[in-house]
Length: 101
Image 1 (cartoon, one colour):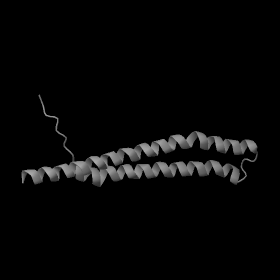
Image 2 (cartoon, rainbow, N blue to C red; image 1 turned 180 degrees about the horizontal axis):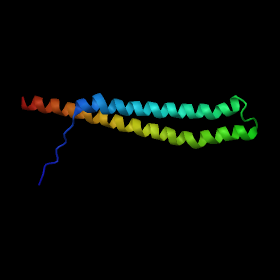
Image 3 (cartoon, rainbow, N blue to C red; image 1 turned 90 degrees about the horizontal axis):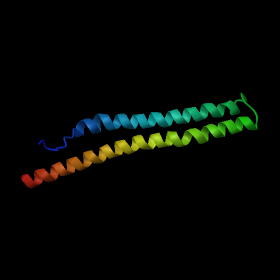
Image 4 (tube, one colour; image 1 turned 120 degrees about the horizontal axis):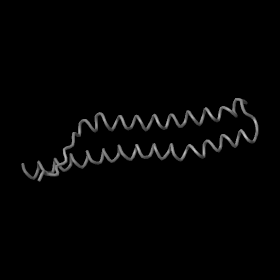
């Protein structure tokens, strides 16, 4: 029967994976902002002008924002969890070295 050892490449996670995930979160947030601005520009620029147009913009926002925010939060949650794993792994490794040293 094998051992259930956790091997963590802290340098790769903190140097590559976590920053890449943070960039993805930023890109999601930027895409959301850009989409809202594009739809709002329909009314702001006079391309659509009526209560229906305003309702369209509001509906777009109400349908899109919760999912975009949830996706952004999920990505953030994942990279924070990875950061916690790294922090705990390093702390445990230091404690183990101290105990064995």
